[in-house]
Amino acid sequence: ICSAPHTRHRTPPHTHPASSPHPSPTHEPRKLLNEMLARSVAPDASSYNTVISACDKCGQWQGALALLFQMPEAEMEQNVISCNAAVSACAKAGGWQQALGLLCVMEQTMVEK
Image (cartoon, rainbow, N blue to C red; front, side, top):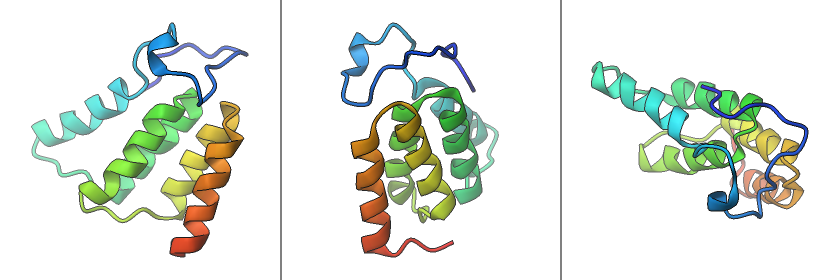
């Protein structure tokens, strides 16, 4: 899942992705989910949570957010696991504003387990 090397200096969330020297951070997670669909395996909330968590561990905050926001479109319910992984990915990349925003949305929508 990790396509970008770990570095001490990550692209902050407010930076445009095109300015990043790393490959598109949403490429690999989407590839994994597309592979599941190609094999007639429907991704579920657990699949999304796993890929969002992998994005977090790889420093791919854009992929984590993209997948989190894609979940309702795929008729998947966001839960504490998916939201926490996205919050963590943003926070680790220096995007405390995005992380705080997600926490506020979680509180307002009363995200459940």
